[in-house]
Image 1 (cartoon, rainbow, N blue to C red):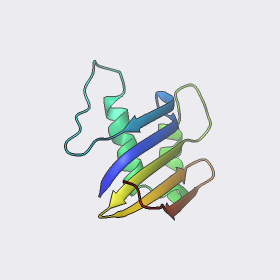
Image 2: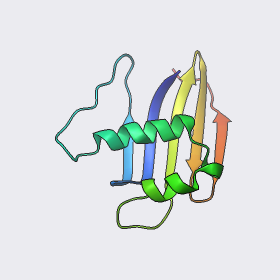
Image 3: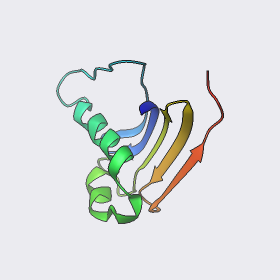
Image 4: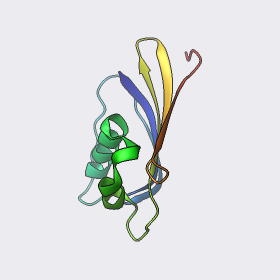
Amino acid sequence: MKINKLQLQNFKRFENKQLAFSDGLNVIYGENEKGKSTIIDAILAFLFTDPATASKMSVKNSTWNKSTGYKIDGEFAIADEHYKLIKDFQNKKAVLTKQGIKR
């Protein structure tokens, strides 16, 4: 599996953050308190957290100083199959769609 893109909305320190990943190894680096661990938390939530059952996490991961829930949109590929996954933690739903062939 390869994650191509992530769009974070109201996730911890990021109100709106888009991430794009390259082929091969991707390294996340930066100064303290710039969001490195937050990006890792977002990837874990994208991969492993069910929005329908994440009520405690939704409060913990909502953008600082806001009470709204968060949303993670992502695109990923498994072999030659491409997918888009939207996890909306405020409305407690996830939508997975298969995308056309990308080259």
